[in-house]
Amino acid sequence: MNQSEPDWYDDLHGNPLRKKTFTNDLADKIRARTLPTVKAPPKNYRKYWVGGATLLAIGFLLFTSDAPIFDRLPSSATTGIDLSKEDNIIMPSDSKLMNLINKEKEDGYQQYFLHKEIIDGTSMLLFTNKFVTGQGRMILSAGFATWTSSKLIWTEERLGEIDIDYVTADEYEKAFLKRDVMRFSGQKISIPSDSSSHLLFGPVWSHHVTKVRITDENNIQYDVKVVDPELVSYKIWYSFIPFTQGIINVEALDKDDLVLDRIEIK
Image 1 (cartoon, rainbow, N blue to C red):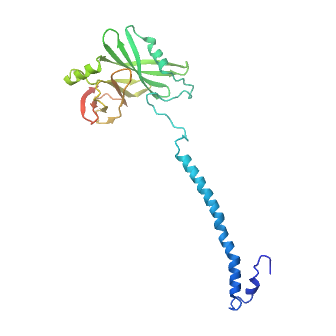
Image 2: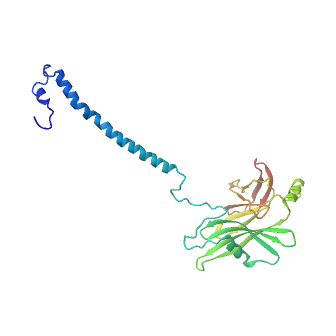
């Protein structure tokens, strides 16, 4: 008998079909020798299964945790997009933007920085408020700051202004009920970095106005942002639309989409 063959192999060899050869003793011997080899593998598999399940549980916890795994791009919200590490662009702080805006400050004006938004890698939309001293009048200004890579500086160009009759919130609400004041107004200006687009913007005085809707002469609607600066008692609405010489319809709506007022901008 070979070493690898069981000790009952010789009993069956040469006469496997004879019943007297396959005795109860031989059956017990075969069963006793074979059962341990059949039952052993599940014990090892169980170890691997437990280990695999543990690894899967750890992986699931890491995947569902709040800790960031991948870098996410910031949106172009009020704080803008940080491009300071790209193309050697130095992003200015709000105070430096105010210094830039006030370089050409006229006498009798107090200016306040209200809102900014990055347009592309080298231009920034700016909104400022000018308070006319002694006249009770404010001016909403829209302009663009442009990055000059050759000089490594930002330059500012003011392109649009809207006069605003200054009133307190209570005074405005009283006038609003009497329909003595304009709820909102608007203006269209060109964009220096994109001759194929226009910027529409304006103030919103009434707190009843929560959204603004813009429709062009082809009845195409465009997205409008409404921001609420902290330093003034009015909101600012603005939108970028394709260049057009047609009439733009602008509507002020409340939270229930009821049109409170409308204007046309040519």
